[in-house]
Picture 1: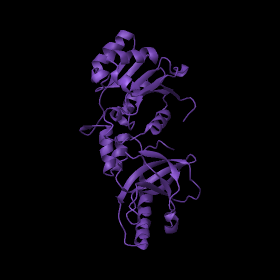
Picture 2: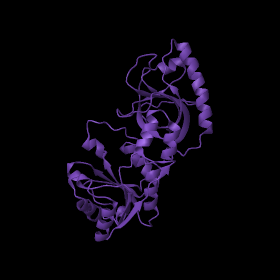
Picture 3: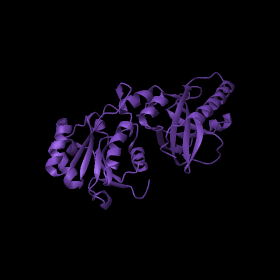
Picture 4: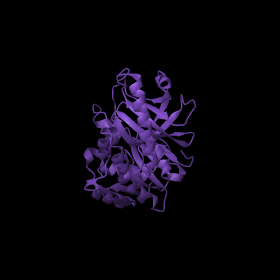
Length: 314
């Protein structure tokens, strides 16, 4: 993450670089094409461009018994914001105190505590206690406090708005092409490479093994992927699932990188998904599994060679 990218969390003074910022406000899970429209408005304001976002996701606070498939956990979301050229982020903890703020009190925080000069919000933005505030109310409250307020229209793909929910649904069915089209970049995950059972080495397909968050509902199966290794993108093929041929254990992402030899244990790896190859299968023997892995690798290389989607990791 660039050193010039500022992160201001609760209780911290506003960095000089963020004073007078125009900030887009939202959860921004996925930082998809619809979100990018808001971010571009902030970036084109002629003033420091920032984001006001929340951790944990408000739904986690209001409905803790309903795990949310986060498209971009905190670290990934911040990395994307930095890559897009924003000056920084105001990250607010979503807790009982924030949830209890009135619409007027919330805008006071923006104007006084965060020292902003303007906001960018979506056409369906609601805020304040009980979601009492709407875009029209935000416009009124900002005008009273001398803040600019820009309301962005919806971004539509076909007949449906571009949304985090639509992207989650695509990933849950393994439809990487649709998810990446709605995102505007290749969806990626970030995790530490951990020691496994070394079975891949025996099969001729050594893998970097990574645990994804428990809330990840990506469809189990085989994918064409790229990983950022030392700042270089390396092509590969990956399995996400429970390994039915062997142990049916906890879900694990196993990434085999083509033409790569090195020790990745303990490293934090970014892995982006290019396309879906097939569902997870149980094979009768190792020979059948290896033969299928050989075919998977050929198909993954073809898919990788044809892909032109934007990368956020390399």
